[in-house]
Image 1 (cartoon, rainbow, N blue to C red):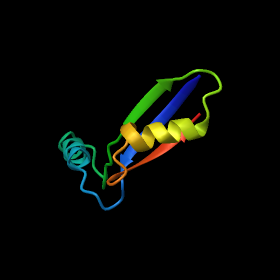
Image 2: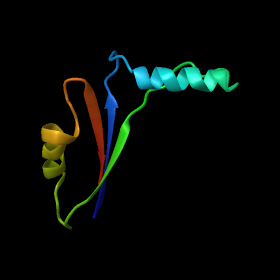
Image 3: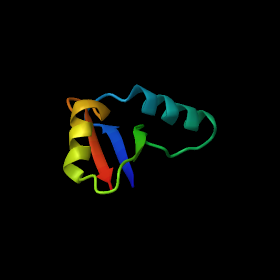
Length: 75
């Protein structure tokens, strides 16, 4: 079974990679991009029957730094 976990920095946390991408897009002539937030997508291939609580535990313990990051699970 496929599970996607999207991890993003929380609002208010400085995102230097996102800012670098925003700046580069402007330099390439893509005007009007006012903000970029960069995150990561983690694709898990888990055993059939794995429950959401187990994936939540994975996120809390390893996949996301919950102090500065939020995550979204798609099962």
